[in-house]
Image (tube, rainbow, N blue to C red; front, side):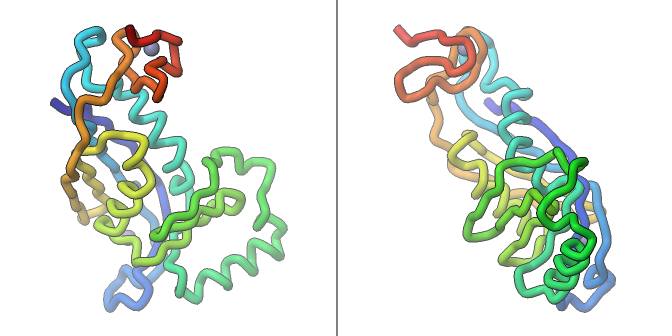
Length: 188
Ligand SMILES: [Zn+2]
Ligand SMILES: [Zn+2]
């Protein structure tokens, strides 16, 4: 079975070099749906607690919220960094607090201090699914990701590695020693 959670991301981007309106900078509320698959853990009668999926995903993905997402070869990138620099907000600002840990993968690099994500490929809905899967595949047993943004929507299904040991009291994955990192339950 699957536990499914949805979260919103508000971001600005553009399709650099695309022949259409989307080559201009614009914004979206993107809706990301993550489906986690496994057996139902009988103790909690859940596959995985949805609030925990959300917490795990948001911890990384908040770097995309109220952020600017630009491709690495987009000439807007140095132009914007110059403005941020001159304004004194490139390396952070007191009210920029919704920061996740900076990440760097083959597909994307996050600069939380200035709410910027630099991508290797154009950040289409398809591109976002690749980035999200890459960031979360080792943290969640993801069966499917759907991302929609304006009229664009895409989804992809993934191979899962089921039968992960989960806590019968709170439903989250046990660590390598069979202990629940949340409540301390130990597998017998
Ligand atoms: Zn767009
Ligand atoms: Zn627990």
